[in-house]
Length: 225
Length: 193
Image (cartoon, rainbow over all chains, first blue to last red; front, side, top):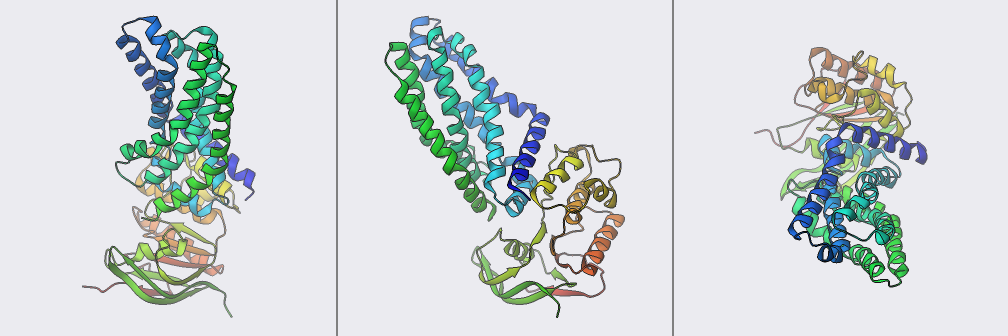
């Protein structure tokens, strides 16, 4: 089968699965906005304090919401045996995995990027830094899905892999958090911040080239049980 | 001379410190069907997974023709319909038959667009069986092919196997029930206690 056929076939399957499991689509976003609201309520409604920390809060919650969506990335396919089939039949294996990660990013990273104005509103983030926030999210969140998929692939065969997944993946998210939140904070302070955004882009590009192969290797390890 | 589809030479496999089988030797030629029997935990499934390549922790050499594996887990997504399911299989391997004709052959007419979660376990197994005839792989590796199937489903497995063997394919089946096919060789794994 042609490589393109494998990719589009996998993409079609992922979209069909996604339309059938809308809770998977909504849960990370609901978590994100619930947690944002908790911060707004806990912050005592003081716009100055909240807006000073808003970039960090939004980025940290995006990381956590992303992690929440990761748990289910391979879980169902693993339980049902489709993952075995994929590993045995797909040649090259990284293409359908890339399709899977891409769809994961659509309903986590991209959805959060598009809803960022709402998050900014809740935390009193000044409107003029909103484009920077959205740009950093757009450029940085693909790296989260790609890096996270490695952890999800490694922990898929463990019954309660959720905590381990967080312990594995969160440290790897640190550079994305630093550059992402840093760029927005510096924009608020009026400091030149393009370097941070370029760094986010670098991380995403490196993750895009390396992660699919690591995910494939991790899945092979997980299936050898 | 018939073509050898699977050659297992001196294969030894141990899991959790227990030797499942040691220095196992057998061959499957075109038209051959080997039935793996043995008590639970004797390594039938593990041997099949060794052949697929999913399990690589063994000693010895395994040479296998392109194979199709039907494991314990059927590989059928609860959220997809049989039609979508087969389309996905077809995108992974070179499908040689029309998915709808294949579904008719496994007795799922009228269920093409029903989500697999609304089907019985036996019907889901039939979707998995459809995978066998969707493409032409010379070697079939079936792990308990009769699981959850009714009498007509078991007959279906036998007739699929018969025509596969007649067309020059080979098969290895791990099973507790005898396949009931003429010319099947039996291989007992583990020590029956």
